[in-house]
Amino acid sequence: MFAASFLAICSVGAASARARADEPAPAKGAAPSDANAAPSDGSAAPAHPQVASPEVPEERTANDAVYAEGLGPGLFYSVNYEHDFENVFGLRVGLGYVPVSATNGDGASVNVSIVAVPITFSYLGIGSLKHIFEVGAGGTILYVSGTASTVGGSSSGSGVGGIGALILGYRYQPPHGGFMFRAGIAPLITSFGEFLPWPYLSLGAAF
Image (tube, rainbow, N blue to C red):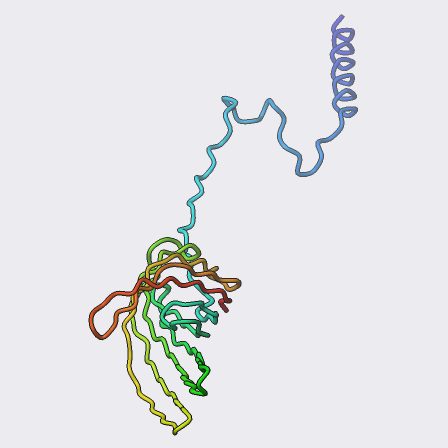
C-alpha cells in the first residue's frame, strides 16, 4: 500500500513538471503579467503643464520709403524719401518743381519757377504697425525765380522763403515692406499766420 501511494505521488509530480515545461517562456524584456503588475486605479499619469513662451512684439523691418505726393507740403506735387526711427517716428525730405508761364496779347510774358523742399517729422505710434494715424509738423523751403518781359524790356528776380505745415491723416504701410498709401490734410501756415487747408495723397513703397 505504501508503494502504491508513493507511485501515485510520483506520477502527479511528473505530470506537473511536464505541464510547466510545455508553458511558453516569457519574452525577454516583456512586461510583467497582471499578477505581478502594480495595482492601478485606471487614471493616467498627470501631464506636465506646458508653459507658453512670451510673445515677442513685432517690429518694423522696412524703415525706408519713397513716394510721390500730390499737393501737401510740396504745394503742388513732390517726390519724397522717408526714414523711420524706433517704429514710431518718420523724417521726410522731398522735392517739388513747378514752372508757371503766362502771356497776353500785347507780347508781355511772365515765367516763374517754384522749387519746393518739404521737410516734415511725423509721429507714427497711433494705431498698428500697418494702419497708422499720422500726426506731424514741419515746413517747406521755397525758392522762387521769375522773369517778366514786355515790348520795352525785361526784368528778373529770385528769392527764398518758407511756409509751415501740419500733417493729420491715415497711413497704410506694411511693416515688412510693400505698397504704401497716405491721405489726409496738411494745413499750410503762411508767414502772416494764416492757415490754408491743403489736402494730400501719397502713393509709394516701403523697403
